Image (cartoon, rainbow, N blue to C red; front, side):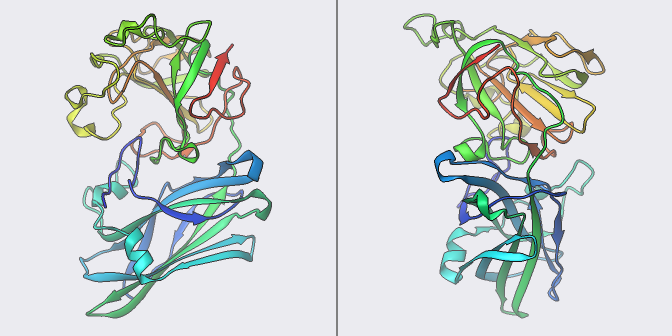
Length: 363
C-alpha cells in the first residue's frame, strides 16, 4: 500500500466504514495511552455532506495515524469505529487483526501529518495510519466518532489508543459565485463523489468551460490547449476579499490530456500542484483558492482588495492539470497545504452540489 499527501489525494488508501450526521466545533481530542501513544487526525475539522440523495445518506472523511515519540515495532491487532448521536452510541464496527492489517498504511511519512506551517518538520514516529471513509443515513444524526486502535508490541505487550472526533455540518458564511460565467462541466468533484481527497480540497470542484451549446472542443483536434473551448475564459473572484496569494508565472501544460510532471514544481511533483493560482481571504474565516490559471494572465496581486466578480486572470492548464480547467475550493486558512476543507455551494449555479460529469450554467 502507498501513502501520499497531496491536494488531490491525501492518503491513497481507503478504509471503508459506514457512518452519519452532526454539528459542533469539529475538533479532535487525542487520547494518551499508558504506552505513550496518541492518535493524530487530518483534517482537524471534519464536516459531513449530503451523499446519496435517494438513500438519504451523508458522507465524511478523516485520516488518522498512530503517533509515538519513539520508534516502535508493533502490529495492528484491532480497529474499531464507533458512532454517536449525542451521548448515544448508534453503531460500532470492529475489524479484527487480519482486516485491520489489510487496511493499515504502515509507516506513513511524518511530514504528511504536519498540522501547520509552524509544526516541526520531524514530528513523532507514525507506525500506522488509516483513512476512514464514512457513509450513513442522515436520520441517525451522528455527530461524533470514536476511533480505537489496538496494537501488539513485543516489548510492551498489548497497547490501545483511542480518540473522539466531532463530525459537523458546516454553515457557509460567504456567498460565493462560480469563478467563470457560462456553460461548464464538472470533471472532478469532492471526495464523496469519488474526487478530491486531501485535507484542504476534499470538497473542491474542477470544471471545464464549454461553448453556449455545451461543446468541449473547438473542433475534432485535441492536440493543443486552444483546441479546448474554455482555454482563456475569464476567471472571476468568487466573493469580495483580500488577495493573500497570487502567482502567474508558471507555464501551461503544453499537451491537453496529460499532466507532465516536468511542468510541476519539484516540491509538489505528484502532489496536486495548483500551478498559477489566487487565494482570497473573505474576512469570514473562509478562503477560496482558484487554481490552474493561464500563464501570464494574472490580473491581481497579493495585498489587493477585490470585489465579487472582479477579474482574476484566465482559465489555463498550469500545474498538475490534465486539460484547461479551473479548480476552486473553500478552506479555513490561507495555505492550501495546511488548511481544512469547507463544504460550499455557488449562488449563480442552480445545483446544490456539483457532481462529476454534471453540466451546469453559471449565470
